[in-house]
Amino acid sequence: MERKTKTIAIANQKGGVGKTTTVVNLAAALSARKRAVLVVDLDPQAHATLGLGLEKEAGVSIYRVLTGEKSVDDVILPTKWANLNVIPSEVDLAGAELEFSARPDRLEMIRTALAPVKESGAFDYILLDCPPSLGIVMTSSLVAADGVLIPIQAEFLAMDGLALINASIERIRSGANPSLELNGIVFTMVNSVARLTQDVVGEVRSHFGEAVYETTIPRNIRVSEAPSMGMPVVFLDPRSKGAEAYKAFAWEFMAKNPTRFAAAAVASPPPPPPPQETGNAPTV
Ligand code: ADP
Ligand code: MG
Image (cartoon, rainbow, N blue to C red):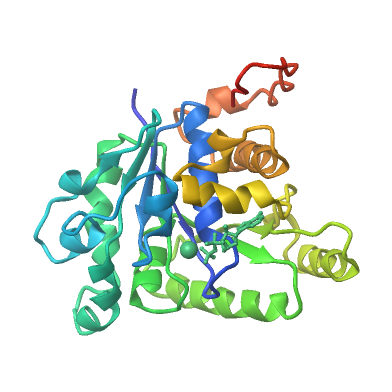
């Protein structure tokens, strides 16, 4: 099957906004819909790696491809779930900002590293989990991406944070990656009863219109518990509110980002959830 791969960077210079949680669960939900997914963990904290059930392992990460020690095929690992693969992170990636700051190809380095994977057509989606800073790794990720997905929390000064990342996107568009799209903005950890939340969501929607995903992700305890089990909540507890939201979000994402392989399948709306049978393990 010939595929056109979409590379999406999940980015926000702020930490703790739900980037990694969104990468892990979007990837899980897409893979459950038979889309071939590659997660690239670009944060030295390696939370996406751990959240997908893999261990950090020295020598196996995108860092080794950037240094030329490994070919990209050597660092793509399968997870225990079908269609879901990871390029892990490792602690040495923390030195990348400094180490690569003088590299003439620093803006293109991630695009170059991933080019063979993209060209192979082996994946529908490559999801880049960016570190929480506007440094070289994030910038280089945005240069490598077709689109950028911004998870944000509905809180005071949310618009200021969006303005910052938008400025980075504009800078990259006017230079190394003119076709970079704003894939969208997704609200995470939403407390639907809080007045401030509603105000912020409304304000962002009025500024960014259709770029804001309809689906919002609620704050949900099961979402925060899942990483310690090394499982996406979408697989750990598929009927939890958080998992249901990420599955709905994945449908919206697929409709917005059809790949050649995915386009036909996404044309129909999602099927209603099957009736829950008590006593059986829930399925995705
Ligand atoms: P980032 O990658 O932007 O730093 P994370 O995805 O690691 O953010 O999320 C930060 C923290 O918030 C983590 O402890 C995570 O488990 C928790 N979290 C993320 N999304 C939710 C949610 N919807 N409900 C509850 N906790 C969440
Ligand atoms: Mg993270």
